Length: 140
Image (tube, rainbow, N blue to C red):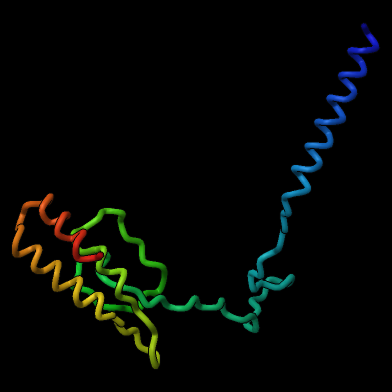
């Protein structure tokens, strides 16, 4: 009985060691040093290169609605997840950088969807259920 327990314990330890090795080998950690611009003598090194600027993003603004335009931003635009009537039509519009400027590109599908949504808003006003039902017809 003791031999059986010892064998099971040995096998278990072997399996655990193998799994540990496998898991740890899947992670690669790279440690690098950051150039502070100060030499060993304490003097500032002015020959280092400045950090690379990230490219500007050309994106739709504002985050919701149909009165849209495009603008260049210095980073990613974070919008809330709140849905606004008409947001489905925005899938037919995009922003592109052309000749260095951020321009709005819409399709005829966007124009017809936006016109349809404007008719829905006139017809249903504050009736949210009616607006959503009408909107579903605009994006089909």
